[in-house]
Amino acid sequence: MSDKRTVIDFRKRRFTQVTRKVIDDTSKLTKPVEIAVYTVLCMYADNDTKLSYPSVETIAKKSRCSVRVAHRSLIALRDAGYIEVINRTDNNGFKTSNQYALLDVPDAEDSP
Image (cartoon, rainbow, N blue to C red; front, side):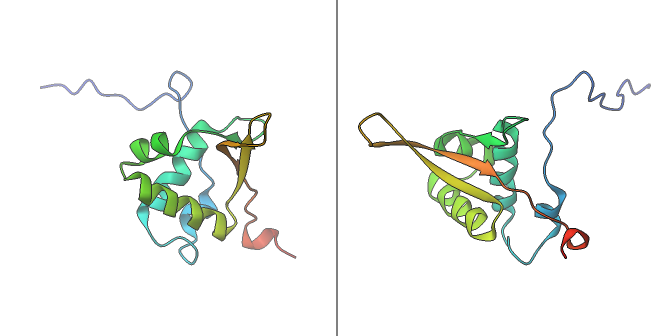
């Protein structure tokens, strides 16, 4: 019986880049769902601006968690310094949604 599976060719498939420091640093994020939420934000982020604006419902669905857990994870990511939450408003100043900026996470060797 022959196996027809091959190695993934990322030139032909869509993929998401995630900052390795966020995954490796266990001192700031303690729950796997927080990493999943960060990964979803990376998946939706613009490659140039690193801005992401999926709804919390989409974040929760893609992260396989509840909306409430997604909110908590976003707060944990913000408090850890991995994202900035930017409130978006309409012309009348009423909040419409959030935008998430992926922040630069320096490695230990990058610090002075």
